[in-house]
Image (tube, each protein chain N blue to C red):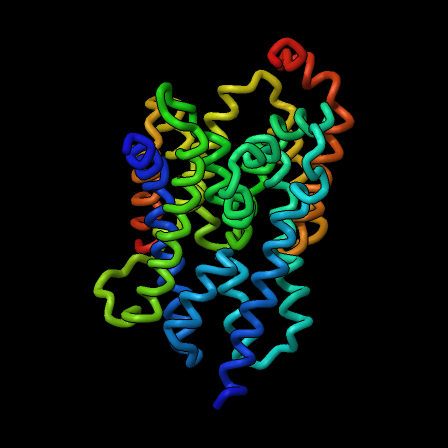
Length: 107
Length: 232
């Protein structure tokens, strides 16, 4: 009984510790020293690159090669970009894009 | 509590994503025979969506702890890159510093990257509340899925797209805010090339490393375009 509970608890603990260490890595690396200029520069420019990569990463399971050719993803993403550019209302863009996606994957 | 209202307003889109993915995780856990307590413990201590979902079948098949650790290392390695922009900001946050580091998920990261500071609000308090709220949505979702997942009457399939939509909104906003488009194009070019070369499961970390390297190499032209030297 006890060994049944130990394994999942240990598994969760191990995964948690690894995840924390990865998050903490840049903070531990620079400690309390003043940041080098290059790191400040990366802090400003890297987010744009990371966010763009994340969008692509989220869509990695889309199969553009066979029906429906990722149409739901393409149309919904285009809608989000167009709405956000035209109206600059985050909630409108997200709600419309998500609803569009939820409808398209059902038809 | 103006800061609280500000944090709620900025985390609403993530509420739905976290609730849905959390529920999915809770259902998987209870199907695999793990109780509510383990679901909630994962949400509180691990707090990483894709890793938690991958972990369930591994645990169910009794995978060795070493392979769990390696999988976590691999899936969550992207977090190494998130901290870089927030070192100065989080350092100033005192007792909240370790929590801010631990709670820096994809979604929290994207909110903190994109919020515009409101005048008259305590910026650090806002950031802390944003992290805390996202974390509680996640815990609530994982709890709900484990507790009552199979009784939920709605078909919410597809609601996880709200995360993609949110990330896209952040990209559009950053496109408009920054004059240099190099970070954006570097990301698109490296991601698509490496996706094609390495496949969907292995392209993420090499892409992030390539972006980092490209930004370092192109520091001069990017800074010139942005005028970073002037704003200090």
